[in-house]
Each structure stands twice: as structure tokens, then as C-alpha cells.
Length: 126
Image (cartoon, rainbow, N blue to C red; front, side, top):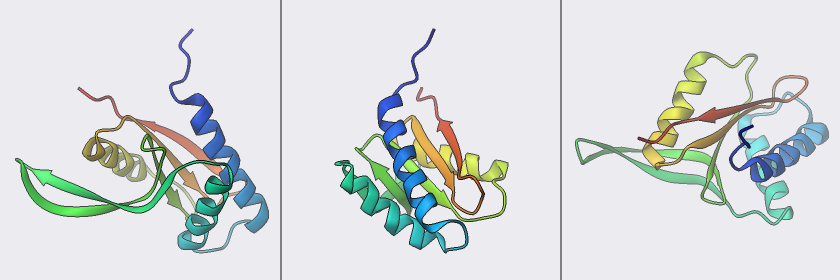
């Protein structure tokens, strides 16, 4: 049986997100959840980058920059939403971020739902 890669770390992130969701509930802007989750992750002893710049290249030419909501332990991209429903495009966006960052594992969290929606996103590096 395959063990989930980074299971302990993603478990810690999810537990922190659940704490934030329990305390705040749905209804706030994404920025409120982001700032609160950063507080909770740091309280758990995790390194977290907030709004981390991610350069985007096309044919080895810098064409723009994206900002990751959160990057935890330089391993897990965490994308936050506060919307009624996640759609396929949200998963595609996270996979694009993972590709650009050279990472394989992400979490997509939606704080507008009851309970908190947690989705793992995997990008297979070639």
C-alpha cells in the first residue's frame, strides 16, 4: 500500500485550517483566512511563506509573476478560497502553480463551506 507523501505535514496544515475554520466559520474574505492560517501554522512551528512571489517563464523568458497564497516548509503550496463551490479551474490553477514552482504537492482549501473543504492536488514532475 502506498503511503501518502508528506502525509504528516499536510495533516498538520489541515488541522491548522480546521482550527481557523472552527474559530471563524464561513463568511469572511480569503485574506482574513489567509492571515489567520499563517498565525495558526506558525504557532504549530511550521515555516510558512505568505504571498510568495513565483516567477513565470515561457521559453526561458520571464513573462510574469504570480503570488502563492501560502508555501509551507518549501514543500506544500496552499491555495485558499472563500467561494460557494470549487470548480475544475481551481484545481488546474493549483497544478499550474505546482508546475511553475517545481513542486508536486498542494492543498486547496475552501473556507466558505461547512465543513471546510480540503482537496489535495498533485502535479507529477517529469
